[in-house]
Image (cartoon, rainbow, N blue to C red; front, side, top):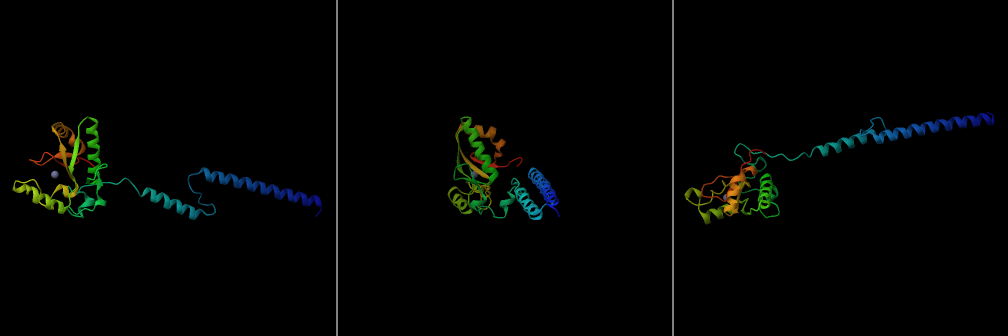
Length: 203
Ligand SMILES: [Zn+2]
């Protein structure tokens, strides 16, 4: 081969390399612009798998859904038993130390702050009550069935994190009677105008 032939061959090879590099750059650009993983490219399987796993785990965290069973007890709490619910399964009401079933806690917190914005002060006296606390309340206040003010231990709505006792002046009592139901809270116990049970129309 003469020198010119060699030079021509080198030029030809360089031309092919440049063409390949251009193609490669275009492919890389296209891949970067695309949201889907190109299945045919080098490490496609591992990348596709990681992508699939990633999108699966992010899709596997939908908003938590809440429901009540046929007895009106939160499905997620029913297994623990009345007054036996661990603190971690309940939710704090705002920045208080009171705890309720999560939807009730959120609704109560919203209700108290909405009332406050309207110049109405709602205090929280009691919320979730453990079985032992209900035994104590029953001892101090007597059983409701016997003219007292305490549900039989194991049957209280407080034991499911589904009722709150509120500290209400006359204005606040009237506000609750007019607005409580909007937040799912109903006055359902005669002789106990402070007791508001969480009976939401929908969750
Ligand atoms: Zn009560």
